[in-house]
Image 1: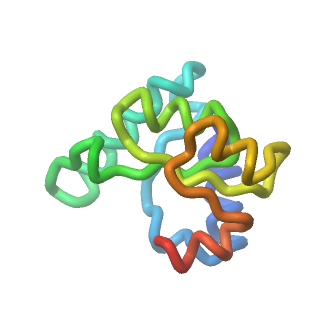
Image 2 (image 1 turned 30 degrees about the vertical axis):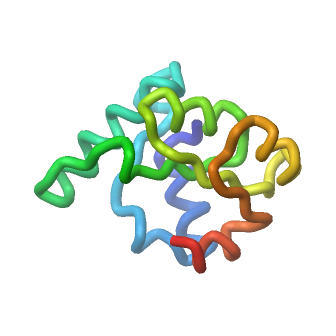
Length: 108
């Protein structure tokens, strides 16, 4: 994962930052599969209620992001803007794949 500042810059660039006032980042833990529980805890603190993994989506652009989502039972929205193509991300088990974050805005 990204460090918090890098993730925030990406979200601002695509005008998605208002959807994501919290998250979990590479600077929170070196093991990406342990970021899911951190994100769920922050979501609960922000919203004043807990969220189940089943109603949670992880957004990423690598197979590691897909594994992170599935490690907590969440779904993964994969964005094919990195090194991996949409077809590769689908093969790794992404639940939904979009070509760009702009395409994700309609889904979100």
